[in-house]
Length: 273
Image 1 (tube, rainbow, N blue to C red):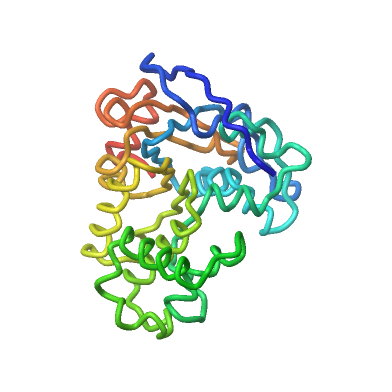
Image 2: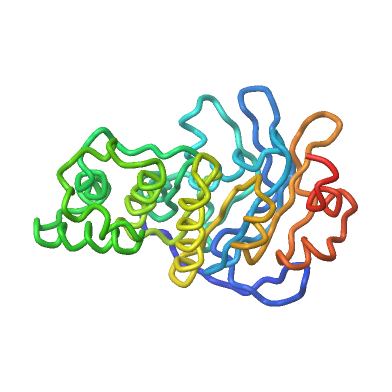
């Protein structure tokens, strides 16, 4: 299904007009009978990096996985409210989920390369979503690896197993795999938590580069990372019933220097969480 690009220009707390890539409206989420999120509403700006922060169990990763419906692979779930991707409700009947996940790609906390060659890891999604000549596929693989700053390290070993790469290389390979199918949004669930500082720096450099062409949403527990890489930040916390709620959403600068809510100020200052 082709997803229509019906753009408008809403506003967020700082009153600057933005174009949303994803508009989250009153979203609640259940795993079976357990409610994980309650009434989340905010807009994710196009061609910016949005960080989602908060203590463990507050629903950040749950919300992230609801943005391309990959959470449905984890079992029986229920979602109420709306998640609009360029104006199209992704939970509406008739949505092509495979097409949705091509347009909203995802990189996970731990690198998850397929047990196949480096080349076939990158080519996998391209082959699924279209018939491409061998020469064109070669171009796409090289381009994706170039974009992920991995080409020079692997160009002579494309037919070797991706499982032989270091952890940092594997994560950049997974980023390249996501980029190869030309998504509009890239979701990143703590992409650096299993990486060493040098590999983390390389991934953060990629995030800065990619936001010129992509919308990026990143879940991170690292406050320094959130302040370094993101333009906007959403802070989540749990209530007394352990249900996750959005406490505050604004520019990253405001969240980290002049947050409106005491709980946000306490969290970014390291006083809890």
